[in-house]
Image (cartoon, rainbow, N blue to C red; front, side, top):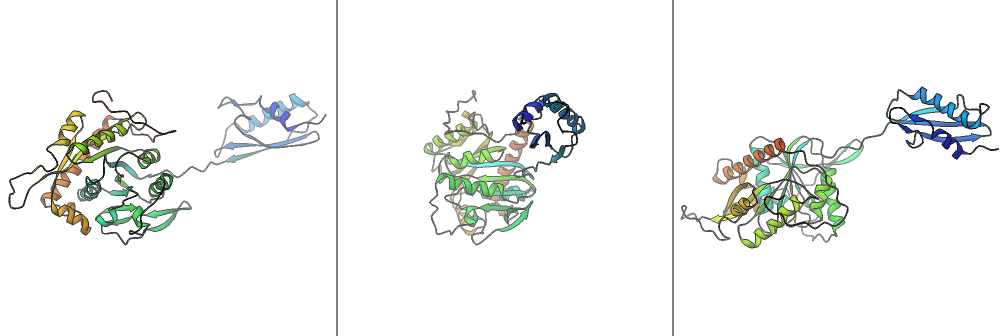
Length: 377
């Protein structure tokens, strides 16, 4: 009666790996079975570079085959063994200590301006900083860093193409704006946009960074979900103006980050365009968009108010000129952004000391974010 390969497998299911307490067939260690008459040969392929049980398992396999088919079967010396070294996947952002999302509930609140100036301020106080412009549909960071004509170089690391971030003002920068014509509208479906963000994250050769800031699009979208799925985000900062219509969207942002599916700590709020002070009336404050809206919201949700940024014409001019206001460390605005950077560092240190590291998120379907209730989440 001919011996079948399936019968050989059945016999070897009786042989268990002593360390794993599972049979060799289930562990996929038995491979390349060949049956020629009464001659049986196969390979034992062990994961890793060594296994102390190789010889004892070979003997056990011989015994199992002979028990099944009789001692006249030719099996002695026909069992080969190999070690399959599993190549580890390159770790994403291996040298980055903290990943900080800069978000906003709605557009037009100055989120990218805050992200750019915070990055420069962090660099000014001695940290290694990177900035990803993840606002795929409206990348403005290249203009704010005077990098509109920049085209990143590509290098090979572990046989994989990696993008070298462009550096200016002590900040490493990558933006989708580096790879498209600035005059072209990006008419992309969700998967195209999220794949672009994945490439900026996974293929950026960021090196050693203390902080990597990710400037997100307004609202809650595929881009936000992709970010938390790709990398463990240390925390999020939400930027808003003081008026009620903007603050209503801030609540949605807080709910997204604090939801069970996402669970990213909110480090605090930044109130932009908090007031206007005319140069000729330096003691006066005019609350054009409402007064202390973010401060009240921060108290309601037990979150830090990291900074209030006034409406100053030079902030807009500096952004348009590609010279962030935070560059002038000795100016009032420069000191304002340094205070913001220092408070952010304090919140990140506190978060890292008091909480477990954030994990990458697994989201299997469309997600609805429940309203966050103070004291319950």
